[in-house]
Length: 432
Ligand SMILES: NC(=O)c1ccc[n+]([C@@H]2O[C@H](COP(=O)([O-])OP(=O)(O)OC[C@H]3O[C@@H](n4cnc5c(N)ncnc54)[C@H](O)[C@@H]3O)[C@@H](O)[C@H]2O)c1
Image (tube, rainbow, N blue to C red; front, top):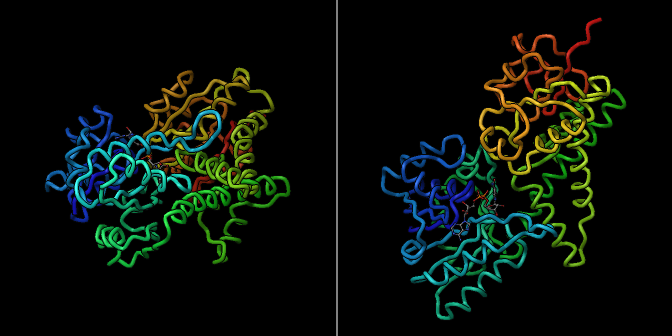
């Protein structure tokens, strides 16, 4: 099948490369000429494990191309994926749909024969209706079907998630569109990935409900962690103790500095707004957002307490800046709030991240960046691990920069526990 993706970011590029790997012919389109020029030279615009090799092999086989121009690619496509951003609208927190609607107008102008327009971007309920209206207004005779096909991949594991999804959600009641979607995803279907056909509005809501539920799980265990600290219980054991119950599950029960990233905060906020607009308020999600916001700055206060209450004149090392490991994405990373709060409390901050420092420098220009984890930790008063990059797990095994550090507050990266929990806080043992 012939496919065009509009928007070649984390989702559009992974989706395009994977669909090409399934054997389809894919053209990834983006307005950002530098991004497309880089991709055409074989340079990846994002850090995503396995992406470079996947893109390279499919370009070589002639199944994957990149372009800034929409016309030819869309005119010949059986399916056009909209994978543009839907950030929070400044001021009110609703999803900003301007990129989606612009893409819809551009697609309308370029449509050829029967085309399925697939909305991959995370969009509020009813967006598919509006995209269809925009296209029909511009091209009343166009033979087109608008489908919702939300994406559930996680950055850092994007290719694996796309190729081995827990489910594929297709929101459409149009048989022709469903047939094309089934053909596009046939390799996954053969692998027994469940294909869930729903109404378009249902599919749109599934994505928001999934993200809000996961954010709730994270926030729940973070609140339980606070209680554990007060009563002398171990939150990791509590998490395991409840997670082994199949009705609960072990995932998303790792305590940390609060959720961040390009999706959870904006999607939870957008869902709250959708609920308010429809007079079906989502009080649980509202509370989750409030608790999560407070948690990030509270992490900085924990560091201050671990150092005797005052951070003036102290240097804090921060390991991990990206919102999760295995990505360079700094959007809404908790590290931004934690570091800002540490600085507000008077600390000097030195940071290291394996992949996110270039992006971080734009958001956090006033801190020092180290060339390695050990250089970061050398001589500091406290070490804060924010992102659980795998390479940080081994650091406490007698690493020279970490000697003399002992956990004082929060879950501590124990050398023998085998797993580092963000935000572990280690502080220098005061000389006694
Ligand atoms: N990042 C994730 O992990 C993830 C996971 C699931 C769903 N989503 C959703 O997928 C959507 C895309 O997210 P992302 O992280 O890939 O965004 P992104 O910001 O990385 O990429 C979006 C791209 O779209 C391009 N673009 C915007 N308007 C365009 C147009 N008219 N024509 C061509 N290109 C255009 C931008 O230049 C940019 O490169 C969002 O709705 C997001 O919520 C993201």
